[in-house]
Length: 366
Image (cartoon, rainbow, N blue to C red):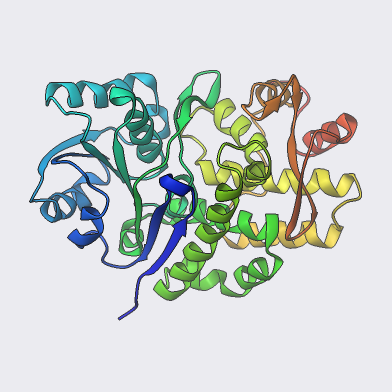
């Protein structure tokens, strides 16, 4: 039987464990270490709840447990949906010692975390990510929030969970498209600081796509360790943590421009990383051979290596300008010096950025 991998995100009094492995949902001792009161609300969506809500609530049978099921999809990551969580908490008279459980992918995790940060000015919450993308990225590090029609994740808070339970068994019910979307964030960790891991992914991509448990635990653990170390050094993204946004400024423009939910987050980030690699090469920082390797790995992972042709260059530039990573009126991008070496920079040539956009996008909308 495979043992669980446990990592610690070191943030002083806000430190917490990240447990990775199979059959974690039904281990009450893991929850008990994180729940300080009696009231627990498990929040999920209408895709995940039928699969795992009963198992989680049965494991929490010693507590006063309430259930809340929200609609599934990025298009529901809104203040209106968030208010449904507050309504439920208030209707059930949940107090300050309560604990929220986020059972689902990144949308549920972000919204439940934001609700926990806001309800009575802060209550405990647990992350149970059920998608690969959430297990390797959004459930770790304390970024929470909702979308606005003008920009993704523009309303939110930094707020850490008490614990993360990444049960790899939940990936068995994930569709192939969602699995690939999660692999995009795994590839990101190899690109920003670990060439050896990127090369491991080149060798082991078939195992990940086949949902080999050993390969998944290794990839999730390695990704979480990378993110945990970066977050521990820069919790509120004043410096190094911005490296985790490789591909995201381009990707968020795609998600917003195409309408939330039409492109999955990981798909948009994959195309965004390919665009960042192209722009890096145009500056002479990244070898053309490395650009080809990046694009090849994305393609092997069943991910897009090009942005959608429906967005014009003008639309793309406007959407990038309102990204939350814009800094004092300028736009910072995460670009690459090599596979495994990234830089945070506002010192890029706008003409070369235009060339990268022109490579794949029409000048104006249809």
